[in-house]
Length: 86
Length: 147
Image 1 (cartoon, helix red, strand yellow):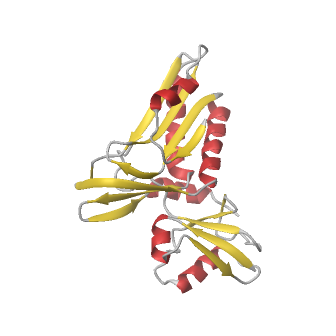
Image 2 (image 1 turned 180 degrees about the vertical axis):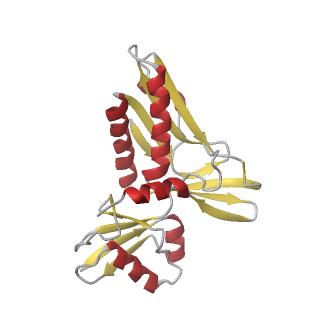
Image 3 (image 1 turned 120 degrees about the vertical axis):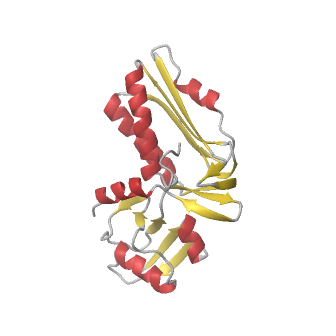
């Protein structure tokens, strides 16, 4: 099946693109997609990635369907080493 | 009003949206870009959003605030793109009959924005650049995700 993967921030820079059109096996879940991305680029982070499926946050075992848009969500803005931020 | 834009934010305009005769308290929070961070001299920042999800998450936060404090008058504007030091990146304006609710709701909304809204910032400083994120809030949020 064919899906669209959107990449942002750190993840986009590591993968060198903001969008990927991928053919992945039927029955894949978000965890297996992260593993596929890791195969494409060994620097792709897998341990901390949050995933959104069709613009909704999902857990790592969410099933992906044909035509889905999957977004890899790296940390949101806020300043991780500055608790006084904003 | 929920707005994500690459144009400069106008806090007065956004505040006026929530200023009503029924609201004895009007609270406006401005997030601005710092010139110094971790001993670095910051040159500028780049903000990036996943749309339309970012907009949807801001709407969700507005609903959460409405459910918890019965506050209807709330405006959030987030700027994206290139921001110079001192620019306003975020405006959260809340109007409510009494101040307690406005103060509580404001803190809640800002925390939630940093937790769930897919907007990222890259700090470009003298000698390098780094994407920044709030890992503590993120880990809290990760625990809430289930399939």
